Length: 111
Image (cartoon, rainbow, N blue to C red; front, side, top):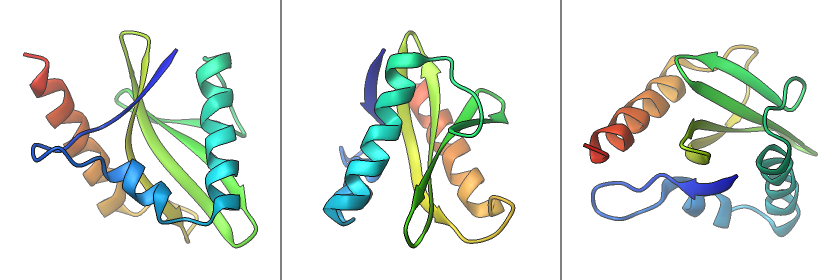
């Protein structure tokens, strides 16, 4: 399966930019987890969890916390929508809403 980064209307790729800001070790761990999903889809817990409405999260355990990358599957593509560090048991509403908005924007560009 191909991995694609969500692109904003002005051409930026927020998840790619977020990943670039991390340490090499963290990028390697998250990249390895994304690659595992790419190669072995469908994948379940503990690596991938469904968030409903076609959204999924890759859960990467780093030495200083848990990173999440929210994605959707579209025509055999894994579209990376949003990445963040999770600090609470539940995904913060604002993080999930941002991923939903990006999903909507992505699907809108297809029409």
